[in-house]
Image: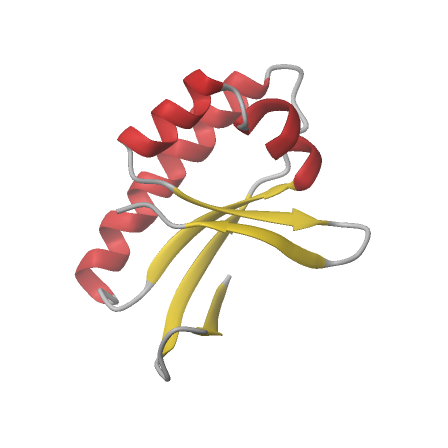
Length: 101
């Protein structure tokens, strides 16, 4: 999903792409492998065709709290420079943005 996000710090509009993942399989780690692979491919494609866009991986708040908050998962996301967008599905709102370098 492509979108635009207004920045609080600057008057510029950040153009983003959000890869939404449900993490419904029995193994969250297996879901993560698939999500990371798709994210990496999309990031490379965007770098070539729409380099101004920043990509984020969107997950439910529960998935973030129960799985993405584990030190090993955070370390992997940081090392791979994966931006994460955490969504509260019930309230239909973004509760956290994590932008990676």
